[in-house]
Length: 178
Image (cartoon, rainbow, N blue to C red):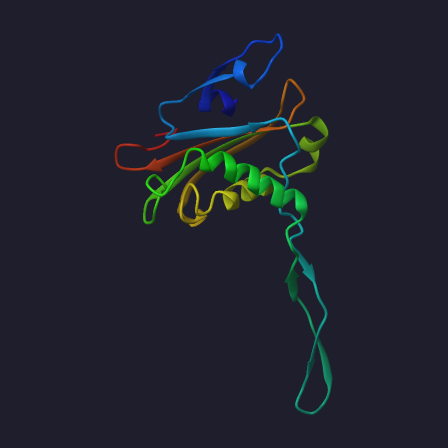
């Protein structure tokens, strides 16, 4: 399980609260943070809607053009998720440790979902929402991400959760697989 590669953790099962959970990051990961519980991680699927475009030629004849789309505004769940991830990332990242270009970045994402959600969403769409949320906070732009490892799994406790590991790739730090 990818989660086990990101961190080691312990928790008490009685009266479980945030204070009872301890994470020990994998030494190959520079930054580790996440969210537990709450709403499902949204996707940015169906971000564009087709529109009808008519071109009027010089001779006055109207011609319908195909394959034109308009960008839909982000839905509330995406905006709320972005803010939650950004709030968590802002506790770790600041102007001094943001990973700046031309440095490359490895991002590892482990997403816990319910069984129903597991069958509904694509892991690549989940990861895109996370990567976009971290722009200008963890790294300047998600084009710096040269290694992305992402999984979705059904959490044993039937809750939504996300753990994100970020590593600045260097000659000496090759990431989780290096």
